[in-house]
Length: 264
Image (cartoon, rainbow, N blue to C red; front, top):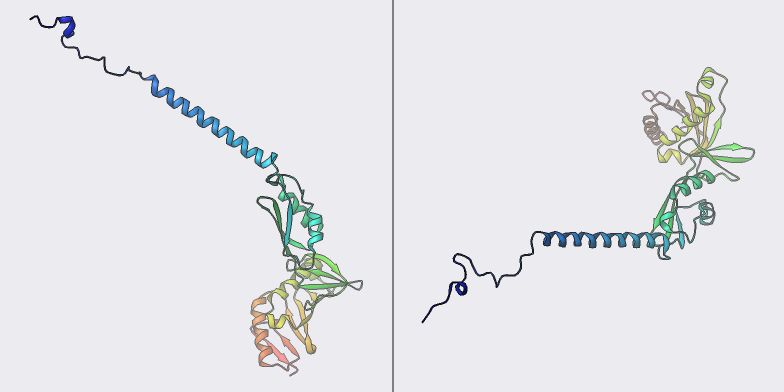
């Protein structure tokens, strides 16, 4: 019986490839990566477009409410009126820096204000008001001066616990050299160096020259302070003297290394 022919057996040395899948070639993987990149790019573009629409075009993230905190003398109503928050505008488009500048310019009592976006639909106004440390009497009214020496408000009634500043500089080289504004800042500097126990009893800060500052306390007591130099040390020494001689009427700490007490 004759065996299979050469054609039937196949060419010598060649494997039978009829069962193998067709070779896709090197282009196959590259097409898949390209398609993936196209899909990712399209999805990113759609996401960016959605975010822009949500921030600027939708009604979801628009200003609907304003909250104010930190006010003491000022009212929420006057702060919010000056802030002029654009109700209904996209929250992301609100110019918070411009609002802060406007509030500080039109309301000098404001020392610092932070305008903060409160997502998803609010603006928060966080106010820090100036605090008076001395008062300057003018025409029956009182000008409030803060710890930076800024005259920021005029009131009809003196706030309780704030000393009156008597700025009566003598015609001298000191006045010509430093000027009244510098003398006012020195007075403010002195009030900042007073211990709490002394500050609450201080009724008047009197300034006649750069190195001639004195304090008038309750119960007709007087303190010769001198210049504003070494204020912290002077404050501590004065508190100790007042404790050691509670009935004394005169205290001199102008030379803190040689303080004096009299009138006890």
